[in-house]
Length: 260
Image (tube, rainbow, N blue to C red; front, side, top):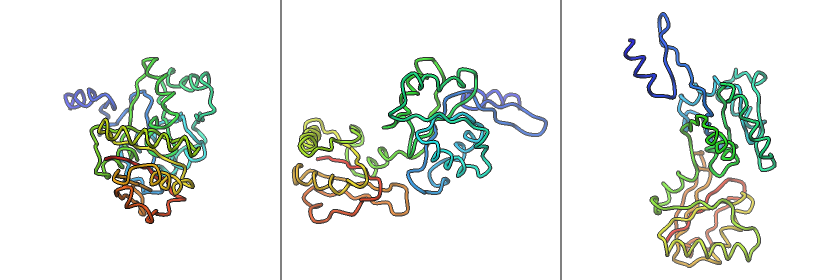
């Protein structure tokens, strides 16, 4: 048993000590990056039980939105001690000085969690700022397993998964967006690189129209929407084949991929 304990302890994420009748996991102090479902998908479908065990032990959270973070924690554990937890809200309005101060509990030896609105924190997400500070300070950062719309959409598209680039939101103004779409399309043919981007749901239809208008007819467009949810939609067609067949995605999150 002592040998087993030493072996498990070397894993790094969880140390193990022997009690009288069983083994009790003890978390290592770290900044845990906690993925969230991409929709109302049941937790057990996309998040491992290991995540839940980690989350239940944390009482300090850096979150994009306090209300939705609390709701997620209650989904993980209906009895989660919300009132006994502390939340630091991190969004595009948070100052760099405030962000640095968020890590005070971690500096004092208390584990913390970073929770995004959906998917994996720190990927196309303000959580990256606090992770960067933690890395500079030599603090341990532990990414937990969970759904990423970027990776899932590349997997399902049939496009180049060895070379791809995610660009977030494209310009809103028509002329700037047209110019950007043509730039991304050129990278497909020059660099053999899949191009990914997103849009606010209510503008998804306009995005598809702009792609049809500005990209070559033979360029391929994959639209992946509501990934991991019951009404998941993933379809790859040439741009010319989407004309007249634009799906109604005005209320659901989608990611767009272009390839040759």
